Length: 57
Image (cartoon, rainbow, N blue to C red; front, side, top):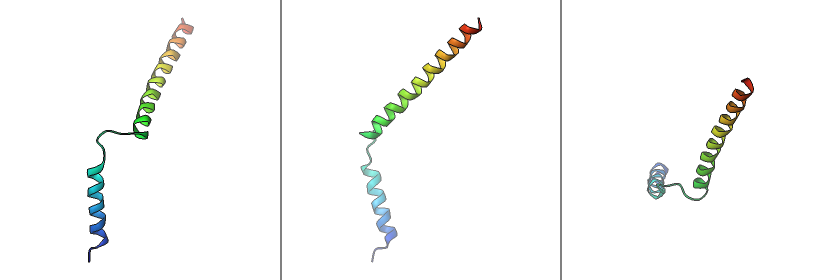
């Protein structure tokens, strides 16, 4: 009789083989939004620094 441990190992190994190398669907959209949010944060911070420097002059 096969133990549950062996069944779990077999399922894990097939799941790893079937995983796509590149993110697809929702994962790809999430990655894109995360990158654009970081860019947005950088540009917002840059503009705030510029406003601060201009008002200090």
